[in-house]
Image 1 (cartoon, helix red, strand yellow):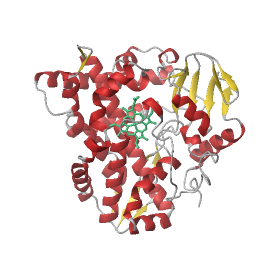
Image 2 (cartoon, helix red, strand yellow):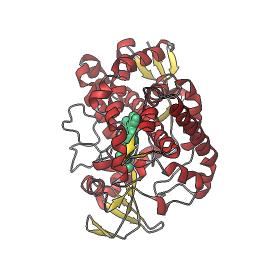
Image 3 (cartoon, protein in one colour):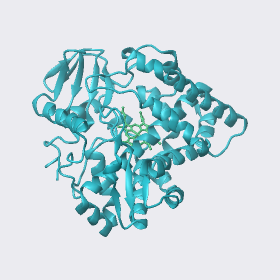
Image 4 (tube, helix red, strand yellow):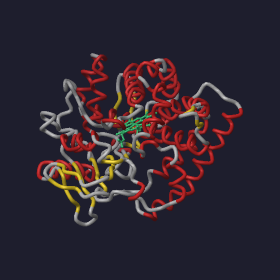
Length: 395
Ligand code: HEM
């Protein structure tokens, strides 16, 4: 069974479009919007590898919005070197595989506490895939995990806007509708920063408060923006990959049975889940000058959609790309990006996903998706793909 067969028609439509475009025009100009799209694995990798030509600073392309500027100060995802490298270095030690491995017992404990509360029918996003990553990241940041409903409310608003595949930036109206939420997040985190200045703890916000760059301390706004990036980047994506893993295993019972029999294959299964259905279907870049790519010339100061979901299914890189194959090795998918912005949280996301899947297998001999109860996805698969409602039957 192909990897798309369990998807609703509109999401299958997006993947069909990506496959068709990659085969015929791996670098494509959308005449309507003047933006460019990149679909081929080779071309997508080249974009990621050249941050001087393909900038992450989209400022000039976005509608102007004061709340957005507040965010921009600590948001190193949307910065170029050298500032991006400087800010990233401040926290990178907290996210190495070795440091993250020390969190395994706590992640297992949180997973077990959450699973203790489920019955034989449950909605898995509410019960596990949402709270697990949010509690972990809240504990790392040192903000109360009890505020998770607040964070969820924010995430729901920030993910409520729909975005079509031919759009590159959210519209002005959608952005305006985000403003109160952006301000609420900002106020919350600046209060946390002030609190940590007064009472430092053993957490990332306190580490950022104490950090110095060229003898300069970060200001409250920068630290708040930084913390928001970690909170936002660190939870919905992991929620997405966990839900997708459960869905793909439900659609491929033979793979689920193989995994239950041989747990050492769980990490490979997670990589294949990430390859087949990446949480971020694309990343955005802006050309700093005219760029030659795949035989085309992209003009300067132009928005470029980098479709990692298309690159991950490029037959030139992945033989039989629509097969969900545990033996794919190596599996150089681009779901965590590539190059200098490669996902800082990848070791953490991999560890949380592995522990959650293993504990689900340990505790339930049967785990089935209850499709009759209605699986729902995030509204914009053309940016973020994953389940936001996932009813399951457990035994
Ligand atoms: C399966 C889960 C995850 C996926 C699929 C994912 C995906 C990505 C991707 C594609 C990028 C590159 C963005 C770009 O180049 O424009 C990225 C960057 C980033 N991710 Fe993740 N992410 C995940 C989990 C996490 C977690 C758990 C954290 C943190 C706790 C995190 C923090 C970050 C940060 C801070 C960056 C920006 C790095 C930089 O710009 O230098 N991510 N992620």
